[in-house]
Length: 283
Ligand code: C2E
Ligand code: MG
Ligand code: MG
Ligand code: MG
Image (cartoon, rainbow, N blue to C red; front, side, top):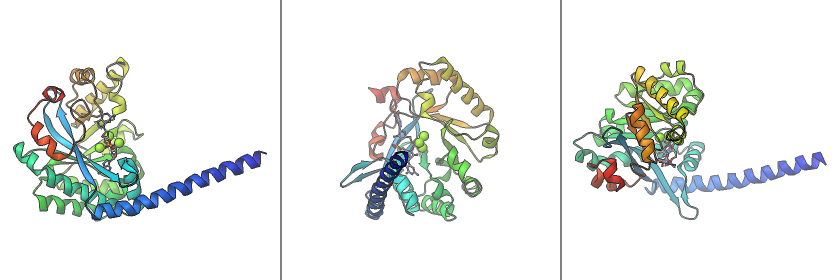
C-alpha cells in the first residue's frame, strides 16, 4: 500500500513535470520569436524621493503577452529565458528598448534620470555581458552613471566570483549596483560589506507592515541607519499606502517605489507626469 501510494505520488509528480516541460518548451520557442519580432515590451515604474515626492528615476520591467496564454509573469519568462539560452537576448532587448524609449523623458527632466535594470544570474556571469551593456549605452548616449543594475542577494550568494567580478567591471565603467529584494536573502552583513554595491532596495515584505507594526518600522529604521553608515543609497519597494509613505519619511528612507506613486506603465505615459509630485499623481 505504502509502495503503491509512493508510486502514485511519483507518477503524478512526473506527469506534472512533463506538463511543465511541455509548456516551458512552448514558451521558450515563442519567447525567442517574440524577442526577434520586438514583441517583448518594457514598462517603467517611477522611483521617487520621499521628502519631495518627485520622480528621480524609473525601474524597467519586462512585459510579454503570449498569444494563447495571455500575459506571462516576468518571473516565469525570465526563468524560461535563463534555462533556454535566451537571457542574454532578453536583457539586451530590455536595456536597448528602455534607453531608446526613455530618451524623451530623460531630456524632459534636464538630462538626468536613473534607470534600474534587473539582471539575472546567467546573464551576469556571461563573460560578454559587461561589454554588451557598454555598447548599448554608447550607441544610445545614455550616461552609465544613470544606470543601476539590480541584482538579488541570492544571485550573489550562488554565483559569487564571476558575478562579483562582472559587477566590479561594470562599476568601474560608472554604473551603479543595487541589491534588489534586500532583507530576504541570507547573506551576512560582513559579506555585503565586501560586495560592490551602491544602493539597497528594501524588499516589499518589509514595507508591507511598517504602518501597522512598530517592530517592523523599527527594523526598517535600523536598515536605513545601516545603509547610511555604509554610505549606501536606499529605495523602499512596494509602497502602496500613504501611511507607509509617512513612516518612510519618519525613519529617513530617502527613495521609494510602489503603486502609491505609480504603477509600471509604458515609458511615454511618464513624460506627462514627470514634474508632478506623488500627491498630484495620486489625484
Ligand atoms: P523586482 O525587480 O523586485 O520588481 C518589483 C516588482 O514589484 C515588479 O513586479 C513590480 O511590478 C512589483 N510592484 C511594484 N510596486 C508594487 C506595489 O506597490 N505592490 C505590489 N504588490 N507590487 C509592486 P513584476 O513586474 O511582476 O516583476 C517581477 C520580477 O521579475 C522583478 O522583481 C524582477 O526580479 C523580474 N524582472 C522583471 N523584469 C525583468 C527583466 O527585464 N530582466 C530580469 N532579469 N528580471 C526581470
Ligand atoms: Mg528590481
Ligand atoms: Mg524587488
Ligand atoms: Mg523580485
